[in-house]
Length: 131
Image (cartoon, rainbow, N blue to C red):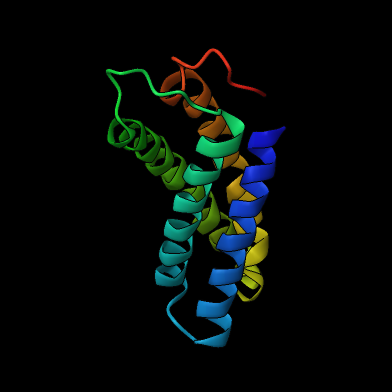
């Protein structure tokens, strides 16, 4: 549940920046999406670390190692998320003007992948992980 709540915060960061960059500042849609996703990823790592998994890092794993693993999971999740985002716009071109809808669909697929990767790989040494 906490992972989903952190995901919602990440989605709000992502959607807000995407809307600002694309709709208000008239930046390229895909560049806007890349920027918004990057900010959302950093936000979710910090929140997941502090609240969801309450990680006590084993001596052999530094924050850098943990973040590297988290980033790898996020990159694969992002590729899935972005692929779904682009596919939905390709499938229904009218949604380009309402980019938050394909963003939400992509985010759902990314959320499932990211939770699985975070729970079973990034934070696997943490017996205190909560669902």
